[in-house]
Amino acid sequence: MIEQVSTRVVYRNPWMTVREDEVRRADGSAGVYGVVEKPDFALVLPRWQDGFWLVEQFRYPVGRRAWEFPQGSWGRGADGDQAALARQELAEETGLRAGSLRHLGHLYEAYGFSNQGFDVYLATDLAAGAHDREASEQDMVHRACTDAEISEMIRSGQIVDAPSLAALTLYRLHSA
Image 1 (tube, rainbow, N blue to C red):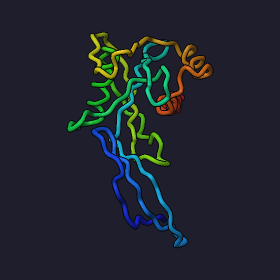
Image 2: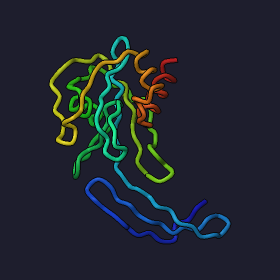
Image 3: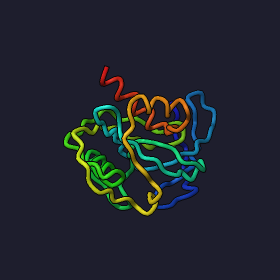
Image 4: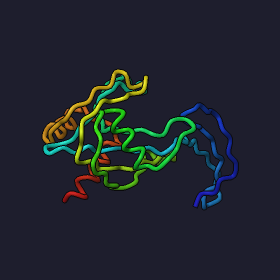
């Protein structure tokens, strides 16, 4: 077991906190951990008959556009139930409304350095509507992709978002 000896915040903005923890390992040796604290998010797998709806946007930290499943967290100062968040993100990013929403599991995005987790939902019985994207999502596009297209997009590096790939794995395990 690792014991926290001290902690200090080294950076904070409205979306994240970065802290440095001094720790003592089980053998008594000292160590340090840098931890990124971020709120949990919801990721939605919007299923249609032949595949899923995906969104594509530019992701600044990696300097490129890529495809992923709709996902997001509550805005600053807001919170609520994760299923409601999943419905909100789906409608905001794609305009789709889910007649049925099923929780598939809870995962962690990068637990080696962050406490951020995410809940995965399968959305079915979809109805079209108008999207309502945030300013940071103004370049986002969405489209329906077949299962075969999604497999090819993964192979060709068009889908590189780890939470999206993990969510797809959960879906396939639940569908088997």
